[in-house]
Length: 508
Image (cartoon, rainbow, N blue to C red):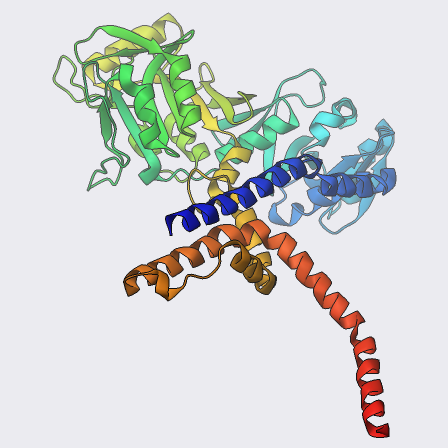
């Protein structure tokens, strides 16, 4: 019996290996993404007018969600490759301006009431125009204001958009701005800032030398505030402990100096740990890192010299916010933060939020800011941060992680497996016949006890349903379809044969 079992398993492994080789060979052409190319070519075949109308339509669709300001005309706009601007108001009326004189008449022609355009235009444009047609913006009136339609929302553009070389930013929140550097960075930044920030998935860590060397997968929650409590961890064991926090968001209070993370323990002395090692560990575990760059990097939960418990300014309020943008807004307080986005490999995104100098009531930069941060941490037990460094899971990677049904297995493999199971059900009869040849049914006489016979049957059918059926699914479906087709094509011949046989029998 053992020899027969070994033979059947070896046959099954052979079939699995053949299917794996076939899948690897077929993967290359699939990655060509022919459907994307086809859609792109179809869009390009629409010509210049179609490509010009698409941004204008998307911008115009946002007008119904906006309220015009008194004395200003709210319009959507787009620019043609020739540099001609087309404006449309909420009523659907259009006006095209090809020079400065026509541009000056745009507001008067599109105003809902005479004299309503005395303060200028509020212009909404699609996001790609700010990068592809930047030179054309110098033609817009000096008193106009610009808004950007991106990801279904409209954002105010800050900066001199009429100057092609000027730096621009979006008002994501009243005190949080996102730098406009490129369209991919814009899309990534808006996605990250709108990402939900669940308190149950946020871990605040306090770096304590000689502290605990491991972290639990779930952290503590304060029963009153429902905010996450700080978990203490030995900083030199932090990189090794991050796999326990897979998929979570980690908040650290430290000072970034070159490639080191400087922190101050309960003893008062400053130490450092390698930041690159922590980044690499976070990437391997798909952990989102938020580092509050503090001038006086005390750790939350420690005691200062007045025996006051150390807290991070604004963090308790920020942890109760719904999104990362609201999180940054709470940390900024009365000041303003500007967020810059940069790629850090195919799976990670780096975002740096810096406070605008002079925007807050308390200075956090310069020599005065360093002295004040030290005094506040020692006297009030509050840590002030003058910037935030975020090392986050990239949007494409995070979407793939969210699609997974079973952790640690890529979602495309999981859905491919489910699809093969469905296809296998359509070729079930053929697959079952093949399985019977590969692994013949057990005979009751081969087993001394009935439970052994039932267990062997159960193993046989489990392997068939979970392994063999998905492997042979496409082949069984094609073979079954061909057999059915041949059967249909042979119907007339079978009918003629039966008729001839019936005629022959009648003649006798």
